[in-house]
Length: 401
Image (cartoon, rainbow, N blue to C red; front, side, top):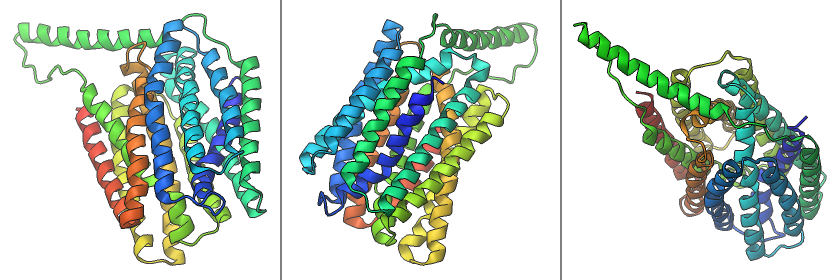
């Protein structure tokens, strides 16, 4: 029951993820793709230091519930204010604050899942959470589809998002409980250290006994992992930020149909989380292999979107939708594996670093994608995103070695 608040929160933000670009570029606000890019990029950049701050302060205090409640309550107020203006400068300012308080619940949530479950259960536990919240996103997109189909006003949609966060706050106030002892992540880190030491001692003993030692003792290249996260997030931001406008303007789809397209993307994500939830626990080596392959898969899927930019037809539109469904599945698998790796690799007190790295790449991508689409067209956006996804594959391959 403690996840109910997160489910309701993600309903609101699933709706907002598609609604905001369409709302800003609509005749009501009169903004452009550049305005969308600036707004989302500014918000993401501002959220980066706060991602680390919220993660540090909750680990420092050992309390996580207060930051979840702060996030949901503040977001309900900010989204209400968002609905009361169409001034682009005010919208940018409010949206920036939305991003700051949105990340306040993220690291505490990750820590609670890790601490309430053993290391062997992390993948399934994260997958269960993400499956539930992805269903929330899916329902939010369905709501957006229905509301846009009936031509309901943007302010009414925003008020609904505000109300959902109020209910999320009340639910979390009742059901979320901090763990009595913060222990599990420390045990996982100790286990990795002892395993590394054991391998080193084994190699020394083999060498002393005159046995041929082929295996090399290498520590993990965590820098390559960090770079891979940034690049993957950069490519995702570059690709996805202007994508609703691509479907709306370049493929000439109605707003309700654009919501329907992203409903399919969310459905792919739900299937991905369900797939991970049903799998047996994997070790760190298996997780490394998985994230490397996902980065390569996304490289190829983005390239599938080049066809609709060159030749508009029903077949190419279906191709774009299929690519998005597969991307949703791939991202679900990627996220669960990187969350599990990060909870093990990152030291206690620095759990927010995962969100910082994702935020850095996403912020730059949110700016690059719309600017490039506005200046050069979507063909170059998709080519750039595919190249960056491939570079993230290279980084994760180095980390795997």
